[in-house]
Length: 548
Image (tube, rainbow, N blue to C red; front, side, top):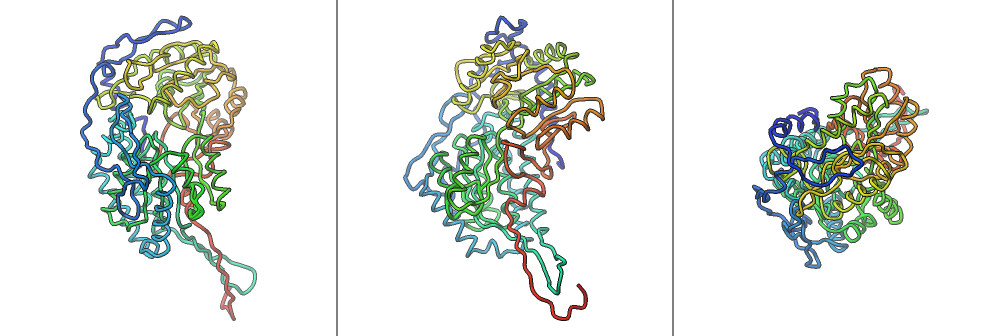
């Protein structure tokens, strides 16, 4: 699959099932809304489906061995459908990070990995991708169980993309090279592109497997070793695929995986003096890569700077505008805007969470957006046809409900939703607000939940100014029938990705990253390799050269 289009994959997998399910009445609706409060929620009311997988790996991976935490502590990982414990995971802290960094440092300085030919490294990455395909059913089930995302999404979109990413980076491993540089005078000048060394990486909970690939793929292709910290909410799949890497022939110590909490394991990795690249907090680290919230990213950058000035790659938050012009096909725009916001339970850093609609088509758009949200199938993510599962945990669930309350108190019009579904787990009604103003919290803050805010605009300069009036700049969407409008908007919007008449089109070769406080650097594509390479200039004199 050369291009992974989450939108097309998911719409094909759920539309027929959604149409066949009866709408069920559930939840309350604000009197300011327009009277629709029914959602397809039958699967929530039934008992949870037993996942078709067993939890096998719960320990930390250090130097090629799965081991308990140095402290002996464990922490629970929860099923967001019920709030019940799935398994107890080894709780790594500073001592475990120290041991993992030491293993990664030894593997880089003394092990076979950096001395392998690039072709040999690429073959290990390809064998790993083959093993992921072989075990894709177990991985998809674990991802859904630990995270709550629809199983069909895990199977049809995310596992194929995981394989594609490692195929892509395997292809890069033997194509990284320097240049010969002409210089004034009798000198031979060349540049070498060298691995940085020990890379620290911290991945988030919303796309555990894909973020694993975004970080690990380029780091290994460039010849680095890694200490990776999982999100404490979703450790299961990273541990599973780490075992597959060992099966693929990755030498011990090249990839180390620690599960634990941010203030302990995460902070230790970011500030570690033997880490050469961040996202890790450790003095032996030379590079650090982090994906998560902007507030946490600022802490990570500070810790990295205070330790050994390790370079930091940050992919952070967003409040992306999705802009619908009056020449758009409204039915298509409604469906795309719905997907841009509600995909992955709204837990997507680039979600189109500010829906700007031209005043001439605003009322029609709002009515159809409300109707589409009401048709959204919410329920057990293992049930076929489910479009929306639960939020990740109680903290995120309560945060979303607080923002919904804020929208109501700010006098935005609650068109539908606005409450939880059921009394077990972390399910939230698909919620739509209209008459949203730019100064409302629901239009400014990253909610990270199924809450669509629809704003009105008059003309292009007005919407450009408002869309850019944020400290975020991760992504943007534009829906228009005019090539001239599209060309204007793609240059005017201050965002790392601008999707024109599409959204969430992800490919291994397409770079991803933000402007402003949405991050530093780019992930995926050729640009991601720069995060894990040092450039060295080598100069030597030439005697009696035949040419210069």
